Image 1: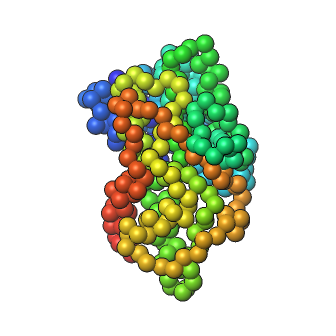
Image 2: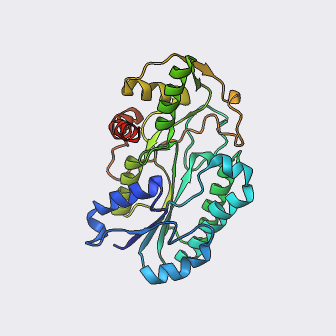
Image 3: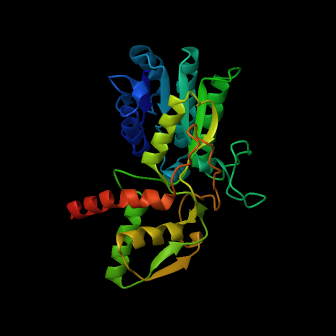
Length: 300
């Protein structure tokens, strides 16, 4: 099976490429990695020629502008990259009868559910920031492109991604802890924003599992098991890293930013073909931290 991955140089994209390289259904040549140099969200009109050139049977669209604060400052750019570009790619893929998987986000929801429960795939999205609105636009444009077909399109929503190459929440918390210790001030941790830390390696393997089982159609919520506040995630990272520093619980409003994050955008995980849920986010963090800690030592 010929599978192309957009955003192959990004955090999730590179994990998807790695997962597909180990999958038996990708064939001897493995996946087709479309980095930004090959498929640029600012030039989506190249999609038809690219599809004709590489002739994939499936495209996994990981490319996105994920700088949520940047999206808030430049909402038109966010819509162009995450919405319009996804629609252009989807229409080109649908016209060629190529299956498409669009990676989306928990931020299509407002994080203020009427009843305190995880969001299900069938729940009505209601984004409260520019990033969420642009990603929801991408979902809907893809659905329009594949209208009338129950097959061909899959939407994978995930949340709070972490993993190589770093510069993610765990790495930022470790850096912030060092600064707090040096300044002899408590580390301030946000206690009123909840979500699901999700390891790119696990999310990528779940996507590969969906493809291998020919079960990609529809909306899937793919996240590690369990959920946490930002503070709880930070405390677990520090505990596993053996870092002790005084901390102080604060409200998200104490960290002014351009974007407004949803306070409780927790997703109900979709069943995977193999019947096993993704491991806990704590277990995934434990798997990732040794690599992250080695990188931090090497960078000093």
